[in-house]
Figure 1: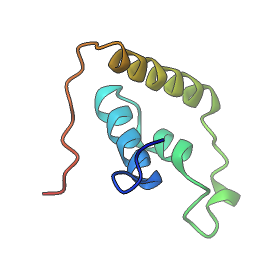
Figure 2: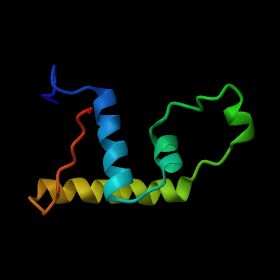
Figure 3: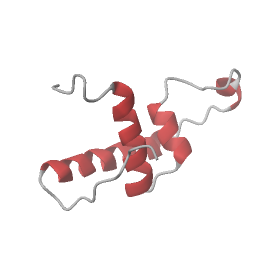
Figure 4: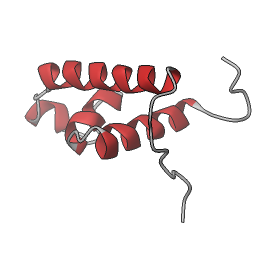
Length: 84
């Protein structure tokens, strides 16, 4: 994709988390569930089976629309993702 040495898979995940939460206003637990490989808690899947499927579908469409806006040269305010 041309990002070798400049960006990583985890970097794209971090970018998505930041944009979806701060620009699109979705809840942290929904974004986290979408981006995760599974529950971080040893017993998390046994007790927390909420998958937020419908909310995640809408969220990912909103994110795709956001990216389309950027590609089309839309008015998008950049985020600062650098660590303080």
